[in-house]
Amino acid sequence: MAFFLPDGNHFLYWAGQFTNTSEDRTIGIYLGSLSGRDKKLLIPARSNPAYTDGHLFYMSEQQTLTSVLVDLSKVRVLGEPRIVGAGVGFQPSTYWGLFAVSESGTVVYSTATRGTLSALTW
Image (cartoon, rainbow, N blue to C red; front, top):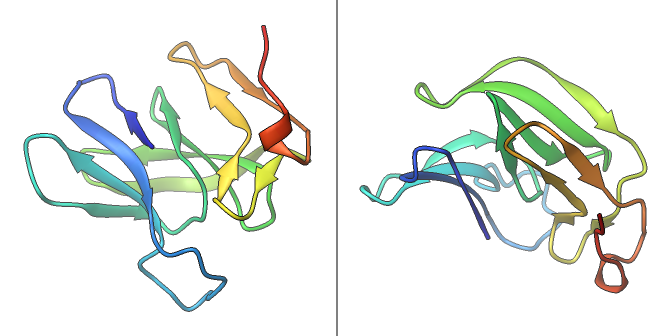
């Protein structure tokens, strides 16, 4: 699943293999565009991405919801990641964190351990 950015051309997505090989340096969150074929690794991670107002959200290796400031024009991370939520549900078989981030910066997440049996509700 891709997370489209406000410009309507660029998007963030996870790419990799479903293995537990920590040596694989190609697994991560990438920046792509509809107008080009280039893919650029933004950050090594085993998680779905979300983005708002310069911040990338993803699940860390410790399975905490994490945010880090990024410069998408230069495809680089700025500063240190910070924990947004601990105990966030995570599907290890698909590397899917149970969270969502709105354009206004509202973050919601589920602490359910079985995401297939849960739903985010308002």
